[in-house]
Image (cartoon, rainbow, N blue to C red; front, side, top):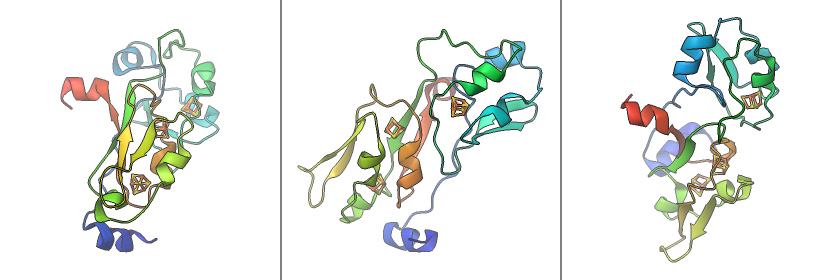
Length: 164
Ligand code: SF4
Ligand code: SF4
Ligand code: SF4
């Protein structure tokens, strides 16, 4: 389905994806340790790290993070902390451009989620609605890649807390 077809069906235009730092790091840790060497970017097998303004950021571009840890391993400057409890506080959100909201059956995101963080609530008429188990979501981004409605986005709680 083309973007214009999606927009016709949903009446909405996809928002640009927010920028995230790679897993196991943070703005503060990067400020303290990152030397802008760029070693983490080519180490990523998914190609989702790019260096901008001297700092690594995640650009999913239709891919997903596998949490392989290659970025953290490649960094010799101590900018990643593999001992933190979870890779990142990133969770998925579903927006109003979900095809289900337009009465069009779809379950591509639930099929794509290996963490079973998404399900369809069939009690919602006529074709259901997506429900998110935020505790199960790893923020990998796999569901974003398959959504024909461009309805899914990731939210980084650290950014939300800072109001940026
Ligand atoms: S954990 Fe792996 S897939 Fe995820 S950003 Fe790092 S290198 Fe890329
Ligand atoms: S971001 Fe990953 S874990 Fe979270 S709902 Fe999407 S596919 Fe599932
Ligand atoms: S893949 Fe997108 S359009 Fe389809 S059910 Fe999931 S959020 Fe809705």
